[in-house]
Length: 213
Ligand code: GAR
Image 1 (cartoon, helix red, strand yellow):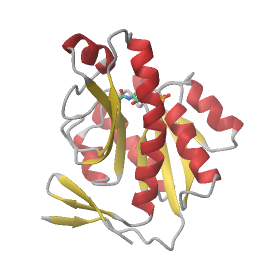
Image 2: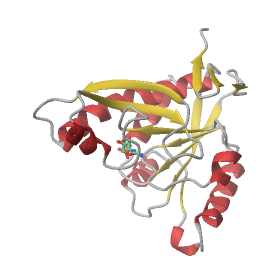
Image 3: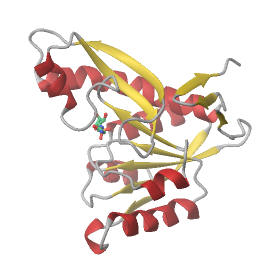
């Protein structure tokens, strides 16, 4: 089944970034926007963590930020329903998960099908989940990397948009490998967002095709 993602390349798009931590991928996307590489603006930086450094960076950059305390909601579904409302209010075209460490409910995934991207620090479908740089070292794989994918209801298993390969060196620690992978994340995430707003991504089943211009 071919699933076109309807986005008008002429219209300036609107992005919501979701983060829980330091926000370096958010910065990479915002820097690409400021550099004129992505035809979109960041309409909202949202977090489930009040003190997330990424929220502070967004405020310093005069972007709208929003924090919602998960403890005020009886379950994840109610929390996500409230988050959906906030995203809807701002007419967002694309949600970019950038180190958002909370699993989205199926409500959210359905509401924004093929309109939520995630960056993951491994070559999916290998090493889904957490602490994946350490898992790659412990498994003895020779290569790991980064993946940008559309988010689906199965965690870390949505259609893959872009990947970058990073060698795993014999003397790598979790920190050195994470740093090397992060540098690639900062290249492929803005690139995937750019392709999205150029209307060049087409989902066919599990596969994402990149249309030539
Ligand atoms: C990044 O390495 C990202 O790939 C990872 O969290 C880090 C966030 O860093 N995401 C996941 O592990 C999602 N499963 P950042 O806050 O500096 O962008």
